[in-house]
Length: 345
Figure 1 (cartoon, rainbow, N blue to C red):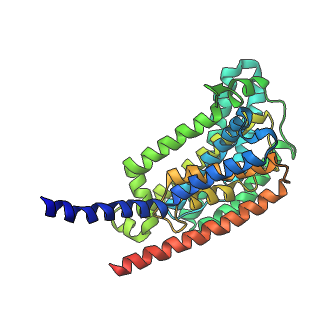
Figure 2: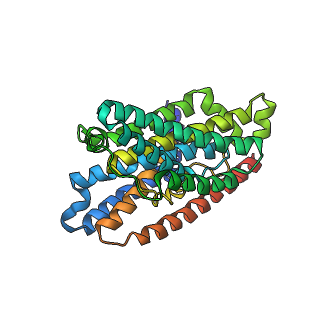
């Protein structure tokens, strides 16, 4: 008995050490740790601790909603080994369509306005996603190039449809009943995004959708040899990403009651940054939804915190760019580490 205890002690110590090491080398742990550190830092620097005020916390959640929806979209595509940098433009076009529908349907009541303008935004996003998917799969154009082209095309269409100016005059009730509405102190748009995130987590982990997505990202030829209709699934993925961008566009118009056709230019880069720094591999095959949530929160905390402490918004662009470089560098290190482990076996 004594021998068993003596021999078991080092094993337990080794197990605890292993767990501790895994925690310290886990991307998600460090992302959330940085989030907490930044919250403490900005709270200390801000005047009268305004950063941690109830109003600003609600602003943080509201700002996170759109970023999280786009982050889910890009994480799915990256998991399958694809890109979509037209998501920001898709959001803009969806918000324009949603705003025009809301203005047109205002006499029919707020319920009709919300339902139809939401459906219009989602359909707009899906159509753009479908075109992206067909260009990638049917014309065999690299997704980075295809969506870069669509970025310009969709932005141009948004300007044409809106007449080159922001669409204003959406019913104020759209804001009151959705955009700025709180449920138990939590902004409704953020709740919508969290529900979408939870569904994405379940789909990725427990359904064939997630299994096939990661299989395509790990090895497209192997997935095709296994019988997966990869082209069809890629088109579906781009359409799902478009639908999420459409929902984000609807949320945008409900929050501000006006479009922002000159904004959202950095949204796709921010989504990619959040996904990659959260643990999703650029090369595909690995997606971390929990890490994505931490990455989105990190981006929002930085953007909001810099404003609260009086730093110009121009510096936010620099910060996003620097973080993106760091995220890609970390991604490369993870891939190198993965290869080393593979050859070691």
